[in-house]
Image (tube, rainbow, N blue to C red; front, side, top):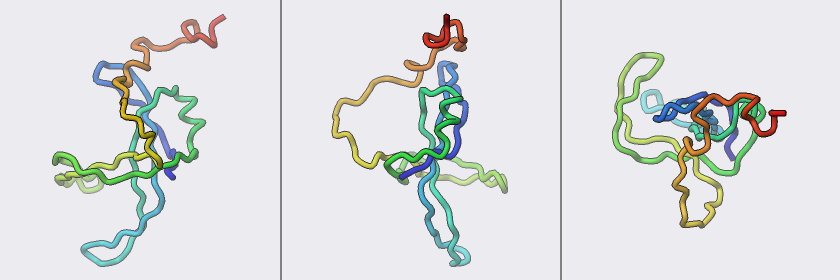
Length: 130
């Protein structure tokens, strides 16, 4: 299981605003290469959503079946926030559902298909307009 621990407002390549859910896996004990001491950590990842901010807030603490897996990818530079050191990584963390759907037909949709390009207002909202 993974837990929704936060959310972030983001902008798509086309300039549309959407919210991503920040998810976190369970506690893992990892051994330091330098000191051989163990420390507790948890993997985090983000997943795009079609939810508004209020829905994202209400989902905080919710659990979703699945895990966060370490996936190999093309090398990229990463800056460690605390030290400013730039390191090269060749992995990312990605959400993997507990039981794959078994469907071979993947959606061609992008987040921009679900998020309106103009700012939503009450007068344009189908449930809030009079």
